[in-house]
View (tube, helix red, strand yellow):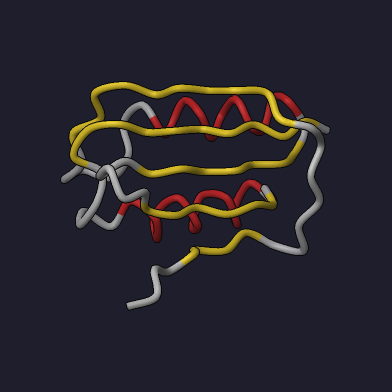
Length: 92
């Protein structure tokens, strides 16, 4: 098991990125979370087997059809345990 912090840069907010990421994470049995960042990027914490997380990262380079991904940063994190994969919504 590995945990990765994935930051997706580009036009990735307002294009259904978080919900599509959750759908794929649920399909791949990835645990973690996805949230919008104040700078317009999306941050994902993903925990699963290394090969499964890599499949998810590969998808992040494309995202949903209306996204325009410019760059994906991936960092190793200490192993983190989550009950499921959730979309973190901003409180307004």
